[in-house]
Length: 97
Image (cartoon, rainbow, N blue to C red; front, side, top):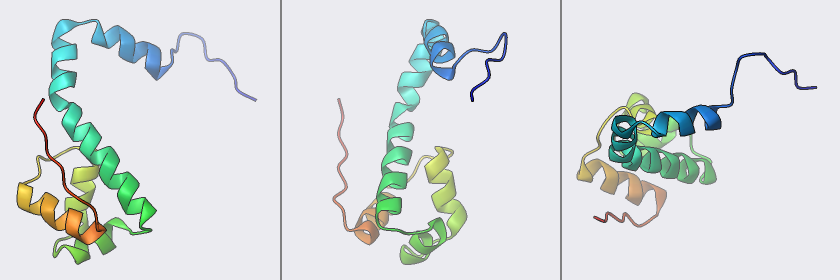
């Protein structure tokens, strides 16, 4: 049974409130690609039933590299993305809009 906590709001409501601020909205849009990349990487890695460590080993790297990508903490190089795509057996698509 869910209990309501007085004074707290859902993240969705909080996010909408934050995005009303033009500076926050601009920053969020700028970082959206990292979120989408992380989301895609996690989804594909789990679909292939790979741990972060196993994927890292497949691309000749270490687990913290995959972890940082999945949290959006780093900007990956194209060569790293190419190695990951090859290891996962998927196409790498980069586009500018």
